[in-house]
Image (cartoon, rainbow, N blue to C red; front, side, top):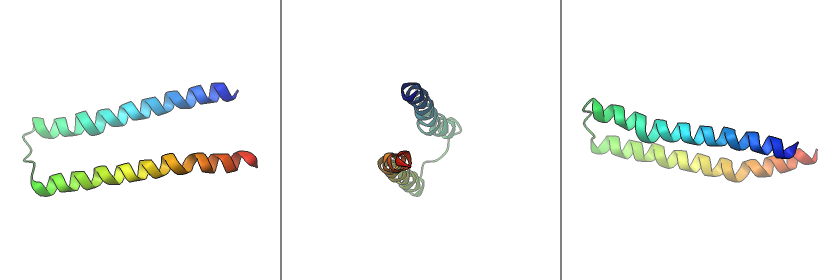
Length: 75
């Protein structure tokens, strides 16, 4: 049963990773490029802050979730 759950979770994670990559790396910047949006320095700084914030949140989630699941599994 654990092997089946792990396989299902892996599929969900792959779908989310591909979907978010598509949205944040291709679709969102592509739409702004196609409409002729003027990329200013302040916009670039804001986008960089959002990207680093996303990385920090993802890193914390990846680091903390296995610990939480380990303690929840003991109960």
